[in-house]
Amino acid sequence: MSIRLESERITTSAETTEALAAAFGASCHGGELVVLSGDLGAGKTCFVRGFVRGCGGDSRSVKSPSFTLLHSYGGRRTVHHFDVYFTKSFEDLVRADLLPVLAAGEVALIEWGERFARELPVDRLEIELTHLDPQTRRLRFRGAGARAVRWLETALKAHDSPGAIGS
Ligand SMILES: Nc1ncnc2c1ncn2[C@@H]1O[C@H](COP(=O)(O)OP(=O)(O)O)[C@@H](O)[C@H]1O
Ligand SMILES: [Mg+2]
Image (cartoon, rainbow, N blue to C red; front, top):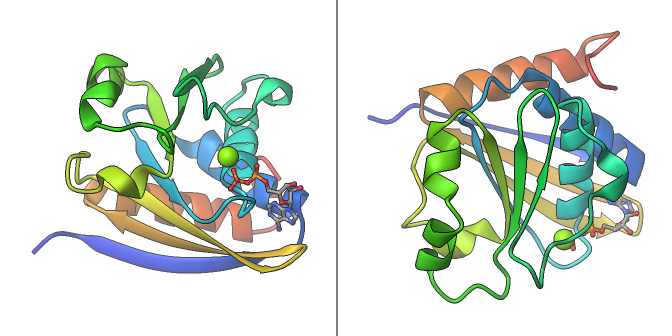
């Protein structure tokens, strides 16, 4: 049986979503894959912005890469930000070196990544963002596989405890 963990958090502003994401960026080791799902405006790009900051990169330049597939950011680990809304086939992700960058210890976050749920590596963190009201979002986390489960536990603990990393 595969190892899985599910959890959720509610955020009440873009800043609190970024702070939550920063805890994940601060605690990644390299090789992690994050699949972000949720409607337009749910906060996927906002999550990536906080993540890049937590990972020590320049988050001011983070914007949605819809028309380019990929933006990459430096930091403690290189963070690759994909948006596959307009991507027709998983081959496009393969051509963008998704698998080699993960193997090299870099990190990938994929907006709308659930579109390729069957093709993507199974050891991954899935985050589903739901718009509850103009300022409120629910983030539902699902860790699949040992690495993702450990990371999810560590990041949520760091975020929830006083003096959390990246908040
Ligand atoms: N709690 C919240 N979390 C994230 N974004 C929020 C929140 N409340 C309001 N917002 C706003 O919602 C929008 C989210 O946009 P974005 O991150 O680009 O969404 P997506 O990438 O999912 O289309 C931003 O304008 C942000 O300021
Ligand atoms: Mg976006």
